[in-house]
Length: 105
Image 1 (cartoon, rainbow, N blue to C red):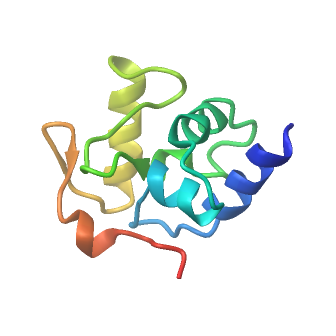
Image 2: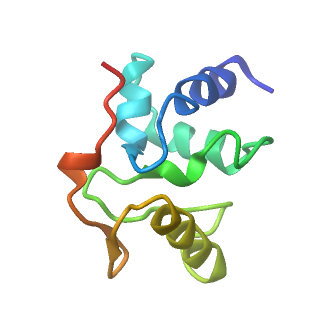
């Protein structure tokens, strides 16, 4: 596992159930703009769901990817995981993002 990926996972385990963060917030917390690299790290998450990559969404509130997929059953699974934690998702977008956003501060 790369040092970058481990840093992403270490941050991500801080995001509590019922809250979400973004690829951008994770990257910026590490002092980088490598948002796609964050997505790649999450795609290769070796310890889901303990490392809750389902809690990462796009900055615009859209669901983004899950397990390397951007459509289909994996996205439905991500939505179900979020909804189980109390996150409301409508038409592939997290509702009330500003209220449930975890910013690592």
